[in-house]
Length: 243
Image 1 (cartoon, helix red, strand yellow):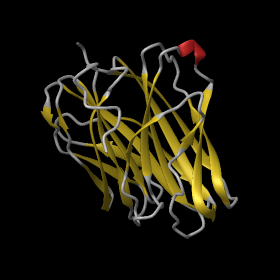
Image 2 (cartoon, helix red, strand yellow):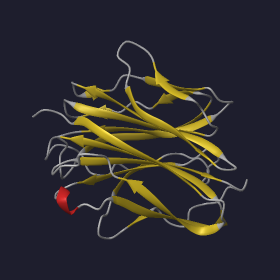
Image 3 (tube, helix red, strand yellow):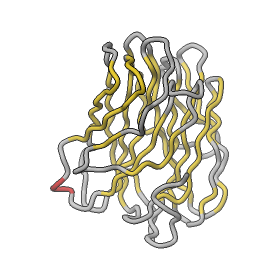
């Protein structure tokens, strides 16, 4: 069975200067969504008032159009600041999907925050268990050492998601066959940060190649994020969720 194929993406920068215990975020839908697609969502977050606080709950999505959590990265400061999340949604009926999606971010106490989202669309992924492997990280510096994952199936797509603490102007990879950067963006209010997503096909099962992404064009940074393997097999993939 052929592996998943990247098709399109949508990005959205959300900012607010108002302190609140919850913030509603609009998630743009990629173009050309079709039956059988898997949408892969990366959300980056940074507080906007200088105080780190913990989330009171996970992100909450509308009941009519739920998403399944894949990974939550280590944050910059072990609280909520600089956290990145990844979620997936299988599209069974494209005609019934909304124009865009929404989620709510809840905090234990009021704060202003900045959030950004990137949604990638893949065809050919399994509708039941498309996530074959995943891992998360946090590191200091502009060179982002993504964690390797071990896939149990051939023909997977490795997705690299990263958020950088300070605003950057470029997100890139190097090496023999580097991942393809889908897009990156910078969310700005009082606090700024950057969010980027890339992907790479892996033909054989086994340990993925070590990849280092580089944020550049800004000041010193701390980064966090995830590596995720998307697969097409309907039975042998491990799960929707990797703890």
